[in-house]
Length: 270
Image 1 (cartoon, rainbow, N blue to C red):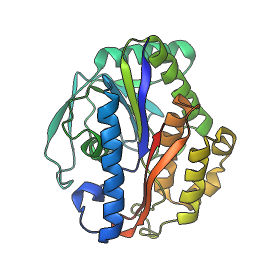
Image 2 (image 1 turned 90 degrees about the horizontal axis):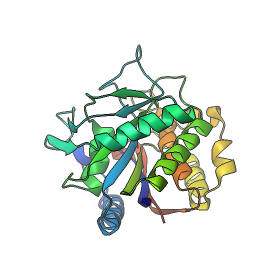
Image 3 (image 1 turned 180 degrees about the vertical axis):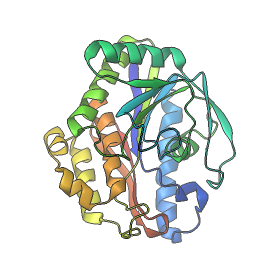
């Protein structure tokens, strides 16, 4: 039987690769040092497929067409779509057969996923891949989770998505990795841009460290909203936590990096 041999969540601020030297030396060394530890853990785990839970920032969808969830059925993915991201264009293999199985199982269990065979990768996927698997040779399944256009999936629904993914990894033969990307607090494009709510970030990361399902699922929308649009992306973290609820999150790094306009964190679910 298969298993989830690697589970992680991390921020995907585009500045991480677009201007990596902008933050103070101490902050960037701590962040990139933690990313190196997460990369080594992935290499040691040797997953055969990587489930990537990440939003779309109007690369494939827009305000007039934004599904709650969309799974990529691509044979391969190309990216990044953003030419300014500081990353060369790469082709990443897709785990199409696994994605089709997830889609079918989701429909059977009441989690209705949209699907696409032509998704283009953007910073939400490419920045984490560049940090964790720079060779980009592990086949991926991108599950796009809407964190851009309200109304967004409820926190409990994201947890249930993680549980559904776990049911598939448990019965399949492959070794799986699962990565949630996004957040934490930031206000992209808003007048408050540059404001980082460290209290919110540390509160949320504490819930992840304790694997506190009750606290995570009872977070009020208003509380999340106050931490900025970027905080909506805690949904990806909850999805991973739902897939491995027996594991507590080990916070490898948290830095309030104003040069990237984001509270940036990296966690491994041991």
